[in-house]
Amino acid sequence: MRVLRPGTTPVNTTSIKSVPG
Amino acid sequence: MQDKNTYVPSRFNVLSQTDDHGLVLYNSYNGAICYFTDTEKEEVIASLKRSGVENLSTEIKKELFENGFLISNRIDENRRAQFLHQSLHRTDVMHLVLLPTEACNFRCTYCYESFPRGKMNVETKSGLKALVKEKAATLANLNISWFGGEPLLALDVIEELSTSFLTTASNQKLQYSADLVTNGYYLTKDVFLKLLSWEIRQLMITIDGIGEVHDSRRHLAGGGKTFDKIIENLKAVKEVPGEFNITIRVNFDESNLQETSKLIEFLADEFAEDKRFGVFFRPVGRWGGENDDELPVCSQITSNRKIWEFSDEALTKGMSMSPMISDSLMPTASVCYAAKPHSLVVGANGQLYKCTISMDEEVNQVGKLFENGSLMLDYDKMAAWTTSGEETDSVCQSCFYRPVCQGNHCPLYRMRTGERPCPFEKRKIKKVLNLIWKNSLH
Image: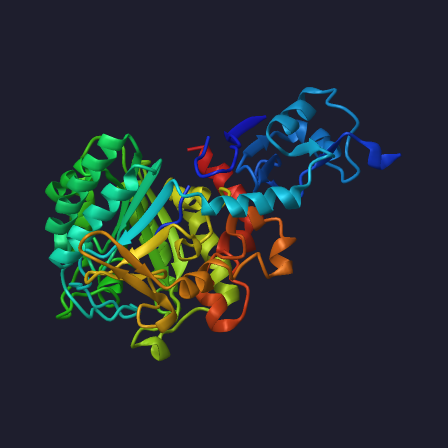
């Protein structure tokens, strides 16, 4: 197994925003 | 008894095959993405059967549990999603989309903006500085998006406000980030270095084709060419050391669809070796511009297919995919800023909006920022933007992608059409996961 991205406790920061465009 | 199994698969899992017959697993509640080889695949699939497993007796089962793909059977995932949705109301984050000017030196054929006014006035600049100073005491994160108009026409406004924001952020020890959308015409190396000094490290620039293909769609207000200048600027930016990310956006429709492969080849020749540059393909849409009726937009089926075909082609040629794609798969990341309670768009005259597209619509004119930093807000209008998603849509509530977009990827689309605004990534999630895996091999 290879972790491409670890999981996070999903409140606001990764281990997050939408922007124009 | 099967339902007594201790561990069950998360309802937010997605499995996708990779080109090398391996497996990519993704969980939309925690954002984890893991790759399993061809030889591990069989056990992974067996461990994720709906009836669950009794214990974590093998290495793979442990890994599946640690990364959130297997969860305790006592967990109520609907409540998890509900709580996540409520967390959008936390008050220690603020995202401001600022229009330092509403003017633009371009007149792109498909643009939906109307350029009603120029640079941000003194009262609004003062108001923003005061607002950020006042809020900073209770903020953990301040995110600024520079938009417009063409923001680089108002570099002095960006400088004045950024300097103030950065001082406040430093004094209050809050995390600050900034991004900027520009047409790239004024993005010289000197300007870029200034942007970096103001912590603007995420930029989006649009290139629609090579030479004339681009120039016929994205020209100056007087009709002049822009392609050569933008490319010259991007080549100079590439020479700058440091951490930043440039998303090269390509807007496609029926008129440049056939030319896009040539553009991908061109971009790969110029930028493939620099991972700070990534591509991002999107279909042209009818968003309220004056040429809407004449736009040769692609059908939804073509759009959904070509976005990822072009991305795949770019990856094969060695280009990186914009991190915006994988970032948008994080929980809450595809909830539009218009739907987030602590986001506001601030116009050059202090007018407040939620959405950056429908500036002229009554429901989007949600208030006013005053010189002393105080806000006058119409909470009925605010509510229209922030409560139109998963709260009322039972299909969204039961969707595997719920934590990511919460039914609110584009509240405007839902208001205008009454239809569900599913993100492009969700519609082709298996393909996207394969591309993210492919991107990770670079």
